[in-house]
Image (cartoon, rainbow, N blue to C red; front, top):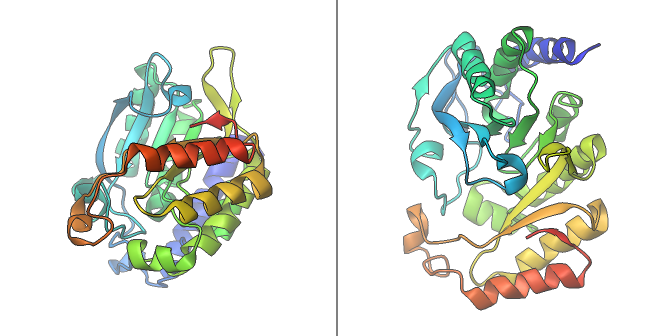
Amino acid sequence: MDKRGRISAAAREFKERLKKCDICPHNCRVDRTTGETGFCRTGDRPVISSYGPHFSEERELVGRSGSGTIFFTACNLKCVFCQNHDISQLDSGEETTFERLAAIMLSLQGRGCHNINLVSPTHQLPMILEALSFASGEGLVLPIVYNSGGYENTETIKHLERIIDIYMPDFKWAANDLGEKYSGAADYADRAKESLLEMFRQVGNLELNGDGIAAKGLLVRHLVMPGMPDNSKAALDFIANELSPDCYVNIMDQYHPAYKAIKIKGLDQMLSHNEYREIVEYAKKIGLHHGF
């Protein structure tokens, strides 16, 4: 079966799963096709906030013409520090059609973008697959980037094999208690680790084309949090030991108090330069050497 056939088959299956939704680990089991909504507050139609060529992503995605980024409204996490909380938590965006979403993908390809970058796709995956089915039939050939918060149902990820070219998940928390406290996901660490292993099995380490642009593979993002060096070190240990020391890791330093974090002790402060450098040096120490 070619890629278009795999997309179409997955779209049909996930449309059925919306009737008793188990797309993500929350397993809400609501019928999203009749207007019921669960944790993600989303029905069965695409809802997007914005789209366009994006130049603030990793250089391997951006190149000269940008990453063709589509920001999907809402989220399957409730991170108290979310810097895009207007989109993820306050649901800024508009419902659209599958055909319109497909047209957006094709327009980004037409503008020269290097990939289609799906931001927060997990809870809207059935709708995305439907749109991808339309777009692939109209000539969409760009690599597809799955840019998620890392809280995934591994069985869902298994169905994306040879559909998703580049996985770019966050790995926020290496311990479940932190996931519950700060992201509303009591099993975040367990589910993230399982899905990272499956993503890596499917696509392996990041591969670049002749122009230095990502063509396939896994790219893991980890946001360093103030006062939590043990969490970062445990996350990096997992990547180095269970995935690969050659795994591309973006160790991010842009934490600042946002959304509810401004009133939470410990999160109400900026990340210091020394805290960030400690984590980068630790990554080098355990053998990680791509990214940062």
